Image 1 (cartoon, helix red, strand yellow):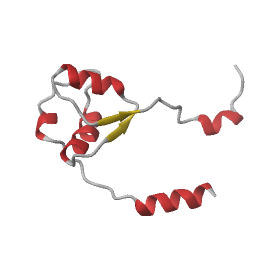
Image 2 (cartoon, one colour):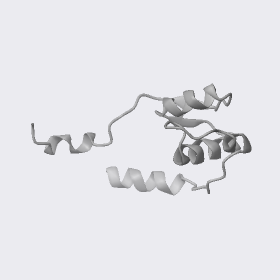
Image 3 (cartoon, helix red, strand yellow):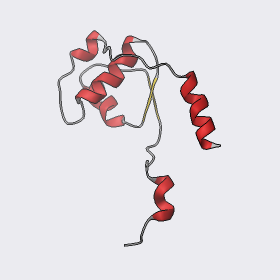
Image 4 (cartoon, helix red, strand yellow):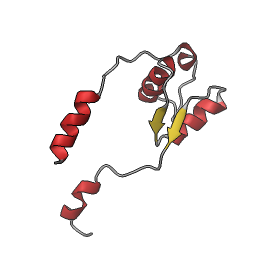
Length: 90
């Protein structure tokens, strides 16, 4: 049923182009503030949407530069959990 749930979810999604807000473009680049994060958070900001993320490092770095985003920070999860059953113990 996982494939069916994925197809159902994808049918409900709308992909939007990267359009970072003007205030996002003012951020200075650093190890935590990179191009990918600027596109994700900046586009969410220009759309006035809440960005769900585990990237608290970027959120903190942006706040230190005076820019706060509307975010919901969740706990990070490994993307390899589904493959753990095949893992070979070290």
